[in-house]
Length: 152
Length: 215
Image (tube, rainbow over all chains, first blue to last red; front, side, top):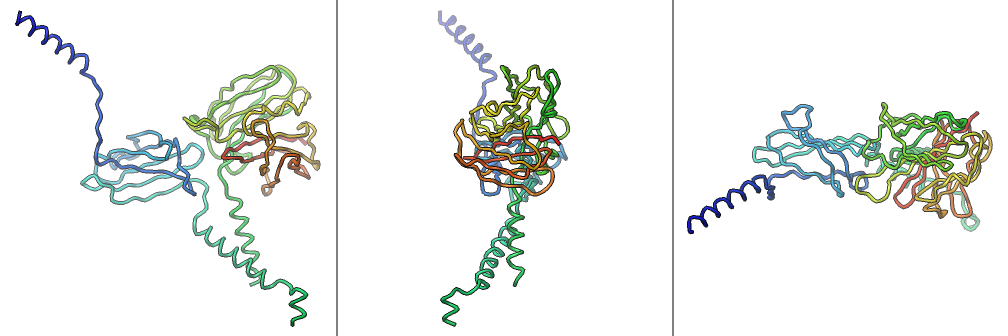
């Protein structure tokens, strides 16, 4: 009887292993690079198409996906070198981040290039300055009021 | 010193000209006879009516043609920098060709674009609006629009007239902006023949309307 119990347990265990042989698992992975894409003014670039190119992959996209509702996307680099991450919102705005990953898998530097209609911050700053000077210039050149003219 | 206000004005104009990409739908011809085919094209960019950007297909939603007792989904295909479709109008009357730009997971569209087609000279301004979502609604029959005349429009949100700025883009010249409010529609004067794109923004949504006035 004891042997039958052992046999049943053995068979049970084997079938269990067959059933769960392809079980999915998950864990927190260290070394992920998280990026965030956004528009001027800070609005997130939601649901933008993201393409990741590895240092040795030339133009081949090795990872593709979409940004989340906050404009975020993450991947785990497995090579040292410059990774290129491009986001395209599908409405004419594209931005590319170049991320340098060191031997420890840590991003050490980034650079970005953008395509799409935008105003550079320095243009806005100059426009504001000139606007203030323009108002001031008009103010000092205004015709004197009756009271001011009488005072003179 | 005298040139400072002028420079300030020029810089202000430069800044005002910078805005997000416009998205529109063209219909041609806009006054066909019943039984003839109408070609539709969805395009976008900064150089209306020339399309500079192809809208990502994943963002294209609610492509529908609504006419007299008709509501048909339109099947658009990418062609260079625009999405194109064609449909044969069977009956005379007003047809609305609509599309939405909507991100996956969003409840409301970012942009609602529309073109108006009047088949068989049976114009009816009452058919210009769906009274759903954000719409720019002409208050005068589009088939009566003539060069040199006036064009009144209002903005509706779910059927209610709301206050909003309407920007008019044409093939040539600078954009024209007119404010529309309940009881006080935006009136564009000195009308010109050719394609016109009206754009309005209200509570984070954009609506566009394309109208083609013939010579």
